[in-house]
Each structure stands twice: as C-alpha cells, then as structure tokens.
Image 1: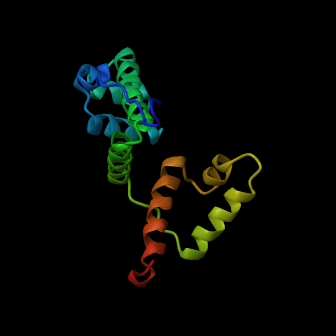
Image 2: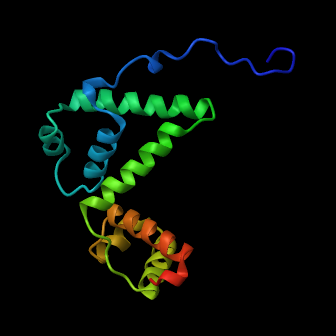
Length: 151
C-alpha cells in the first residue's frame, strides 16, 4: 500500500499470456474432471480417451489451479466460477439424478450429518457415490429454491 491505495502489480501474470498445456481449455478440463469424479473407471482410461498422459494431466491440473488461484488473489473468481459451472453441467450430463422423494433426501442428508466417518459409507449403503451426491445437492438446491415447480 502506498498513500492508502492498493498497489496491484502493473504487469500481468505470466499465466495471462500462456495457453493451457496440451491445448486443454477450461471447459475440456471441467469435462475430464467430471468424468474422473465419477470414479467408475480408471483415470488412465479417461486420459487415454483424451490422448493425454498422467504427466500432461498433472500439468493441465496445475495450470488451471494456478489460474483459479490467480483470479482469487485478484478478487475476480471468474475462472473458478466458469469451471464450477462447466463441471456441474458436465457431471449432470454423465448420469441422471437419482430420483428421491423429499423425505428420502431429508433422510439421506440427516444420515450423512450423523455419520461419524463421513458420507462415503452412508452413500455406499444406498448405492450412491460422491458424484451422485453432488448431482442430488444441485437438484435439491434448485428444487427448494423454486418449491412451486414441484419436487
């Protein structure tokens, strides 16, 4: 701070001028990340389909994590918000949302909240994974925000 004003670096970060490694743009990164989050097949299989190696995926992941961090430091989380939206859309496109009644959703949330060992066991007992829980959370957040449209 000088004279009570913020002093942001006048030079843009080097990341602003670098393209993403291996040509993996943010939306492709989100799509691959969503597929990996399903944990229904090995990451190596997902990467092979995308013609990426583990080393390339690590480089891509670090690049986009740095971009999100850079935005956060500048109080402009545009990259993180775009990733979050693209990831959710990609994840929702992979599998349908499990059909649960409002009562079943409530029971699931309470069981997870009461589970001392976290959500994995509770979800597994119901044949669900964390990706399913993410889809359900988004579904119920939208449904509860618009109760007149039915659940």
